[in-house]
Structure formats: structure tokens, C-alpha cells
Length: 110
Image (tube, rainbow, N blue to C red; front, side):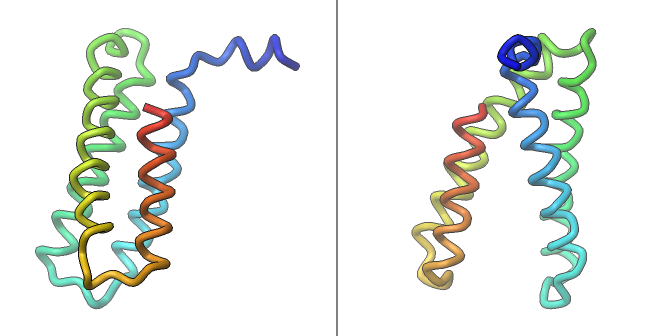
């Protein structure tokens, strides 16, 4: 069992988590009727960036260029956006906890 786990490079955790998280986010954004067109567009733009970087990092020929960008984009995004969520008085405690957990997992995977 451990030999099989060792065959999976550590970066696959980040790629898998990124694809899972942002595919889920797509569903949430598209189904949120309270968002304006601009609110939907910029949120989907973030999804596209994350998914494109994750898919690019899957390609062996591009991995050495794309993976560092995915790592730093993930860290930077979550420090800025996650920090903003935590500090925003308009969000309730459960929303902040959920996003803090997502932030910790994402930065940890990166």
C-alpha cells in the first residue's frame, strides 16, 4: 500500500484538491441567483485560472513551468481572499470557518 502511495508525487494532491474545490465552486457560483453578472463573471474567472493551472500542471511537458505558478497563485489567492473573508464583518462565523479550513488545506497542499 505504501509503495502505491509513494508512486504518486506530492504535487498530485494539490492538483486533485484544486480540481475538486474549484469544480465545486463553479456549481455554487452558477446556482447563486443573488450574484450580479459581474459578480458571477469574476468568480468564474478565478475558477478558470485555477482549473487551467491545474490542468496545465498535469501535462508533463509544462509541469516545471506551470506548477510553481499554481503553487504561488494558490498561496497568494488564499492569503488575500481568505484573509478578506475572515476580516469581513458581513460574513457569519460558519462561513468564515469553512473558508478558513479551505484556505488551510489549499495552502498546505501547495
